[in-house]
Amino acid sequence: MIGSLAQFWAAVSAYPFLRNALIAGLITGIVAPLIGSFVVVRRLSIIADALAHVMLSGVALGYLLGSTSRVFAAVPPIYYGTAVALVAALLIERLRTMYRSYSELAVPIIMSAGVGLSIVLIGLARGLNVDLVGLLFGNILSVTQADLLRIVVAALIVAVTIALLYKELLYLSFDDEAARLSGVPAKTINFIFSALIALVISVSMQIVGTLLISALITLPVAAALRLAKSFRALLTLGVVFAETSVLVGMAAAYTFDLATGGTIVLVAILILLAVLVWQKRLRA
Image (cartoon, rainbow, N blue to C red; front, side):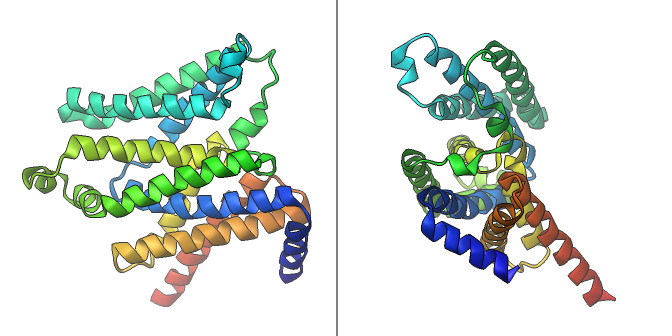
């Protein structure tokens, strides 16, 4: 494995597109578990899948609109996907208000709409030059300088917002009712939280694809949850495990010519299994 890492680092030094891919992966390895820690504690893991499917439909819409006008074509499809996902985040909060006693229904409703729209719009875009495999499973090697700038900006927005609203997000995550009674603007914070998830998904889509985004958000946190003694430790360990998954996964994918997104997720699963086995041996 050390030899594989050495070969990978040599290739990163030689090829700019690999440097872009590595930087994008490392940035994703930071923001995904940051938002994922709050997602897991809130027991809302499915929301990442829901917004990912909605974003996929927005990307497909971007391709369709781009085929009709040069004005629409000037905007990259990922921006349409992000915009649609942000609207979906707002709708999720609206549905939670409408179904107060059954607020968990909001996410599957939006997810169903996202899946339906994705199927229809991808079918309509079939004749266009659409990288369907890249959308579903990621294509980290296609990251350009423009993509990297977008990823950096989105990641900064996520990190800064979490830092500014850390106490409110933490309070709502562990005791929603008490937070509301103490005056925390729950509706606003929850919408911002959903919007942050949408931004993380926009960052992660090229790295692991729509179908694997929720894995990168939740798996490192799941492993960290078994070891962490505090929420800050959960955040730190989640980032460590995610970055390890990205580095080892990219190196293995480069060495053995594997799909990068899937390899990163498989490494994250191996880390989780290793943590579970290690804990079991300690208790034995």
